[in-house]
Amino acid sequence: MRYYFIAGEASGDLHGSNLIKELKKLDHSATIRCWGGDLMQQAGAELVKHYRDLAFMGFIEVVRNLGTIMANLKFCKEDILQFRPDAIVLIDYPGFNLRIAEWAKKQGIKVIYYISPQVWAWKENRVKKMKVNIDEMLVILPFEKDYYHNKWNWDVDYVGHPLVEVVDSYQQGNTPPAIADTTKPIIAVLPGSRKQEILKKLPIMLEVAREFPDHLFVVAKAPGQEDAFYEPLLAPYPNVSAVRGQTYALLLQSSAAMVTSGTATLETALFGVPEVVCYKGNSISYQIAKRLIKVKYISLVNLIMDKLVVKELIQHDLTPANLVQELKQLLYDDTRRQQLKTDYTALRNLLSKGGHASAQAAKKTYDFVKGSGK
Image (cartoon, rainbow, N blue to C red; front, side, top):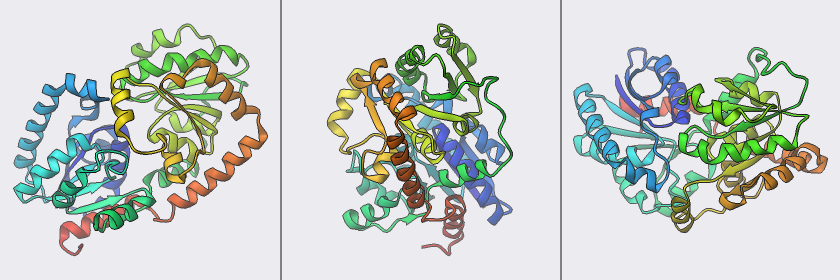
């Protein structure tokens, strides 16, 4: 069968690649075309457009790049029609993918959505159209199944969170390479993947290094950004290093971490690393978002656990002084570290209830497209 995948971010590329691998085990003749990244391409999909050309962050940035976004939508629709897939598999990336879902439904193409848009946080009115345009919804957060059923009378499938299997597989693999030639304890710095967010947050995060001369701070470079972009940001700090493509090896060897909001906060928790969550965006975009978003927390760890497990330093609270204070607690407060360990264990157990997420999602996808699904 023929599948057209669309992912617009690094995390979507990761989960899409694992879904493709599992899908090929069930459908040996699968032909897959995708918008995504290197991982999806390596998994066997033909890559049409890389996610680095698609990622625009915040309200103002989207408006500025509206022409590019509309051109991408037009090209995507034309490419889908030419490819003639049996189904489209949309992975997160709602601003783009929900438009494709609505269009595809009108074309009579089956639509599968893997990793739900966070409609429970904002833009809840999207659900009405989603229910009409999406044939099979596969969710990865345990509370989402009840949310859709109880509030919208829509039965979706919870398949477990794919990051659990990704982290487990890595930890059970070979011994990772040493991140740096140092005896100093390591503090991981995960500043995000988009250029705009890195420029906003990384300078603040790196200032903290001056207060911890006995530690090595290691920045995880984003796959979509060049080394030259980071060089002037890192240069002023003698105890700061950087790695590329070794984020998991870095987390496995870190004593603590400063992490930008998003998927990385959950990855860090699954590795058991004490973390502080950092967020700072365009001031206008932030003020708009603050008035629209309805959730209590910005990190997935806190949202899933429904309590403040990890500290969130947001916008004006994201300062070097606040980061220093929090890092000292994460490194030296035994009570705090033990509580985090307990909470992280509970988080992992909660996310593992669905089983092997990629395999479950692949089976749901294959059965549905084949005609034996719901």
